[in-house]
Amino acid sequence: MQPLTEYVTDVLIIGSGAAGLSLALRLAGHCKVMILSKDLLNNSSTWYAQGGIAAVFEDNDSINYHVEDTLRAGAGLCDREVVEFIVGNARHCVEWLVQQGVLFDVENPALPNTRYHLTREGGHSYRRVLHAADATGKAIETILIHKATLHPNIHIIEGCNAVDLVTSNTLGLCGTRRVVGTYIWNRSLEKMERCYACAAVVLATGGASKVYQYTTNPDISSGDGIAMAWRAGCRVANLEFNQFHPTSLFHPQAPNFLLTEALRGEGAYLYRPDGSRFMPDFDLRAELAPRDIVTRAIDHEMRRLGAECMYLDISYRPKHFIRNHFPTIYDKLRTLNIDLTSQPIPIVPAAHYTCGGVMVDKHGRTDLDGLYAIGEVSYTGLHGANRLASNSLLECLVYGWTASVDILRRLPTVVKQAHELPYWNDSCSFVSNSNDSEKIILQQNGQELRLLMWDDVGIVRTTKRLESALYRINFLTNQMDEYYSNLSISNTSLEVRNLLQVASLIVKSALQRKESRGLHYTLDYPTMQPNPQPTILQPGRREGYHYEEGSN
Image (cartoon, rainbow, N blue to C red; front, side):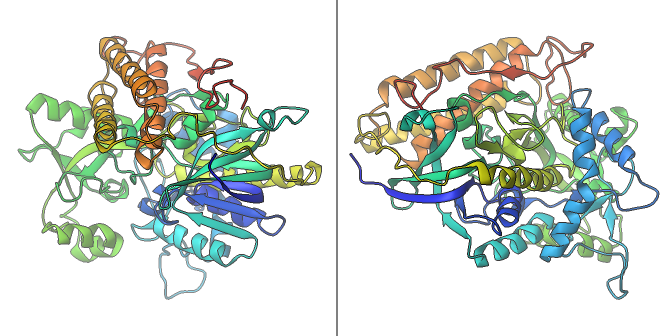
């Protein structure tokens, strides 16, 4: 048995983006909070978010308009009640951010009480996106990290990821089955640790876009929270809807660099290699159509022409306007000898956002008592079949707030008595010795999976290719279970394990949807069916549990 470092806290938050950090700050005045970050605190999807936060601040706009735009983008699969709840609470959550110290761009910085400078993005009927130049996520994350690191009730652990959730059944506790903690893998020390959480465990782990070969996400976005929740018995929903951002930079030295939606909101056009526009051929809104439409149009033109990329051009706008509004993009492109102010930018779509996830209610509660999921890891019903631009940070903030309300309500009813978690069982999978050649094969399996998902479960799908993908995913999963069960636990083995789990759930969800809707487009069912419903998957009683006896 490995001796394990053990932590005890009131609330364990797994993830350090806007959702996790905002929740931690709301809770920390009332209880002990531990934040578990897979990498450095700032290596989250929030940090890289360029666009902004959608919220109604102008008199000519309205909450109803924002709701309708969200429903329209979601292609009939949004939960209207949830949409109204999130949009209705947008303003006060943004104002909370401002109170923390986040500075959004304003119309005239020289004047007191000047209005926010709002941008318009695809699918929005009005300007309502608050932003901090073109690095909004970085501005938010910087403030939240600063506040969290200074708070005496917040304990931060970087470079560690959760392996599996542990429930009360494992400890032999009576009453309703609930989550009590997690095993933790220390990525730098390469050892197992454990954490007991008296009141709640919160998944704020982000999405699963690393399951695809090409993605705008940081390398940590491997669907860990979705996989852990599934193994613990939680339902997942709408995982067939993975959003591909239309405009990722096509350049070998910057394969993950996003070109924000706000570029098109401020007038950038999309062009074929011959210099002709194509978006008016696909949608009356042209470049301001929702992301699913723009992405499919780009993919269609690339395949039709055999082109390796399309082009995004805003160079007709004044140079000072471009440099002032998009300084991050301008500076990054200059390092690649590309001038945003004078030439078109080569772009391709890339996996960007997981619209489905772990099913939760309006407080972020999952099927497992004491387990919450907030942010991209969750399925709230907000995004439907396609996320409206700049609604993701909004969802993080609103659910950070509403989950805090429920957890604080729960605190007085929880007996704050720590129980020692069992030692990590050395006879379980992933804990014996292995050689370098086996580790290389495991890495190759992960690479094969990502390319397979890009080719067969990407922007345009067919039933045959989905079935072929599932067959191969099952083969790789069985191979890992049967041949690599003696691999030492490692960053790679944990990640490939979770990627295979999430990939399987994505393909199974896609096979269940016998229509094309939003981000799920299949040539075998090219039209939408009436009365659409979410795709919900529920694990079997024993399926996917980490412990062989299925007791956790």
